[in-house]
Length: 265
Image (cartoon, rainbow, N blue to C red; front, side):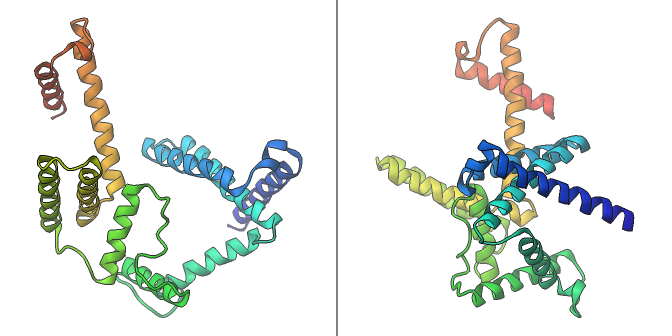
């Protein structure tokens, strides 16, 4: 174990040194700012997710390395301007984990993962109050993908005491919002008004998966992959008759789509 820790510390220190040298000697890296690098942080996060789903260890190790690079670059830039440095960031991260896991590092106890999650949220709420954050919905980044943000809003509202009782209630709300959307459409409402109703529908629907312990992002991502798979089957079937989808009518496309669904089943 001691040998492993020594190797890990040495490799970590080497990566930090490489990043520091890039900031000093590479024109591209010197020109970067936290804002200019933010898009790469997002891209690497999604590439890491793709590597996790692929199940390929080498790909995951590579993408985690790229993600670590972005984190350390941000930390190096912050250190250069005196905002914080790497030891402060690492120490704060460790302190937060210790503080939010009293069942491990203190005398508290937790018998299940659900209880741990509840304690974690309680601790976060207490921290937000001490920081002067009044609303349970404050502090959720506005630049999150809208689907993720919608789910987090629901989770925060639940922690504060407001939520649907069950999945059926959520789906009833979705049906209600769909009816309002159709009513707006039938009334000749403006595109903005119709979009508002659609947004209400999406907001409710984004919270449905968490009632079966799924994330909205993962649920939609799987459906996207399923759509791609079936769409390619429809394309292939159309190609067998030397035609493109644009040359088929709606009934023909619908028939090919149903055939693709049957094959998946």
